[in-house]
Length: 362
Image (tube, rainbow, N blue to C red; front, side):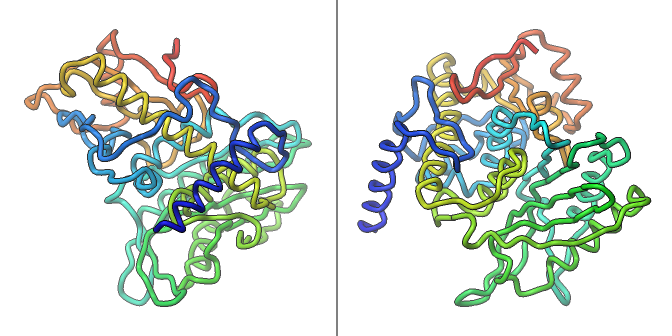
């Protein structure tokens, strides 16, 4: 435990030193707003409004977290906050027709991919079908490399020192250059999976793209990120790898992460995610007498099974309206949209690497 703490302190010192230097290999910008570096302490006060579904509230896990690293292992909180960060970073690339997507990380909706008896793949199959349709292959831009990616999750079995059942997040991609359409699976634990997860993913991807692939030759490619990208057991786990991969693909950069670049990206990503939790704690508890006076919810688009990662879709809603238990709704995208329209005091919050969570005009 002590050695791990010392290692993290050394990484922190190294990252602080590197903040004075330029780097070509990192994908996350520095966290520059005034609260950067302010400590987080867990467990925290409850900032979840019980009158709204938990899965719509990205900070709903706050009182359950026992240490900072737990944020990065919480599928709902991290899976809803990381897209806000990516949406604020990704910029158009003149060489690419690029879009990134994410599956909706809701705890009780993970697909199980295994053999022979334990399988429940309806969710991920539907997600792949929806994603491919959203990719809009027929209307790809002439003269540019067409590239689409999505972060997906599932449960399967891995074998390293022993066989373990666990959840996993990876990146799927479609790339079209000329008459060649390549389906890609990009992930870190490629060689550790017990069952043929990738064969099944390719089968579903191929079936989904075939109606849009007239005149194109379909290829399949697996990309193993071991030796190219780093993880650590605390913060930078498989979900962070999947989202970082989206950033590399958007920048058209080779995935070849040095130790120093990983330390820098780890430091920066942690700070950006922490900044959102700091905002939630400071804003909600300093300005309101009780949690039930306010709710922070994800956007309507982020309630869909699959959504594009961009600023139009990825934001939070801050409302001062309390939904009484008698009026609780069965939440759908349409119901949430109607909820926003019904109350003029609902505020839209988007993330800025420089200023943190800020109120947006639309």
